[in-house]
Length: 443
Ligand code: SF4
Image 1 (cartoon, helix red, strand yellow):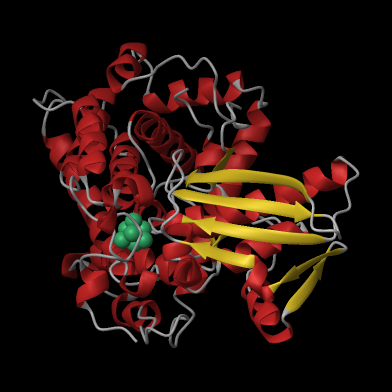
Image 2 (cartoon, rainbow, N blue to C red):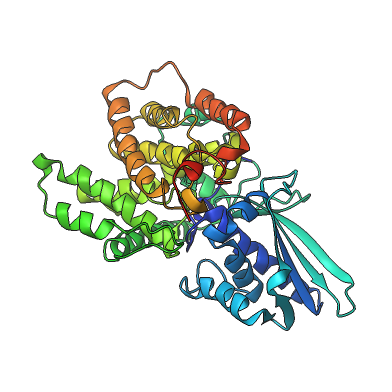
């Protein structure tokens, strides 16, 4: 399975984390909906958070997201402000009634040492009768980017092609004789059974939500939640670069602010687009907006997103987009590669130059660890997105200066990223047990 629909890879949701917030919300909803469909009406619920979801779950809003899902809330339509309130209410009141079932504060169990064999991000929902008999228990894996899978299941998620036309970057390039990577991705979207109008509408909705997160991010100010004391900086940064002329580097300065604005929205639990994860949500919107400022139109935006989707699909299938699996090279590195590819394509690059740009961007993120201070998606994440947006621009420029012929292929870099992620200590995979997370004082 390689091709993942643009609608799944870029899903509209809430911050601060695709794997720790969006995934658990979807899992909770799926579990509670399944109880209802099976006409089961248990008395009590329990949620067990395993591995990384327990280690950094509080900072990522995982318990609140799981509760919201059990209530039937959806990441696309829920009120982002209402989600964290659920966890606060449970802590205050000691017990909630969720769709007729009781859940006590002590029923949310944190098990950071319980690492599920399927994935480091796992959570189990349990339902009990009033005599304490277990009625149903399901473990879900939150595999990154908001995608979830039932542990032990082999279902193909909606929006993922069972028989895509390519499985490697080399295979993708083989399809590009007289066609662009965006056109190949477009064909894959239609092959998933969507109409042309539906794909166009979906692409436009994704960009509109991305752009809205930029606009909202440069309006907000004040401290970010979580107790770290980090302040939002996008608004004041925007005020200093808004009118800056191109010859002063204004466009590049604004690129950095766009990325920070989105990631501050994400850190604040606001509405953002997973791209391809929440922690890395600022890179692609920032680079698209940069190109829009320079004249990119709506067809170009669609082409950018489709090109980025083809590259993101390759990385997801052949390595990982999950920080808990591969460290930050899997999150911000992937977003950077996707953005570099998208920008190169809309700047007229050949498919070979697009592949080269993605390769350059990923190559220079290899080994990047995930070490969020306090388990919050703030430091280093917010600045890291701005740096990666800048790197995407550099990668596109380097590739466009060449002819697409290069020594290290994207396939090799993706495989290297996978191996590096496997070798990486779990301390650097979204557990907040190493790196900056232990060296920056945080109370
Ligand atoms: S350090 Fe990177 S992978 Fe880790 S939470 Fe931040 S953005 Fe995500």
